[in-house]
Image 1: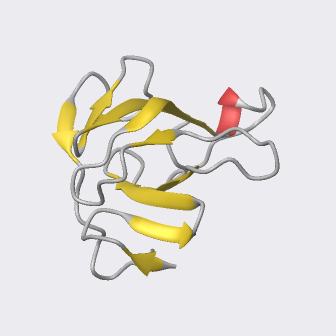
Image 2 (image 1 turned 90 degrees about the vertical axis):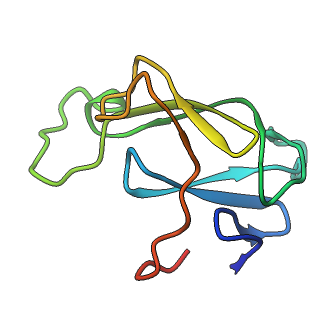
Length: 113
């Protein structure tokens, strides 16, 4: 992993990640098709990235109805559009930033990418 900018990390030549302020965790996306797999469109800008289509991350009960959440568990749904370095959280997010649009934050200094 290497940092491409304060807001974007490269995990492999075909994967990039950004820090999600709603989940307090990274979201990593494949941006180049790998052996016929799907990939997100990426505008190539590490300072103001755009990814298409939307980014949907599901955990907990969103993927396993029998899941029993515990304090500190991540949000169960994070759904957003990342455009020109801003993240627009959709209304189906289960975290506090649902419905808001914010700048992509810098990676936390105490957190490895």
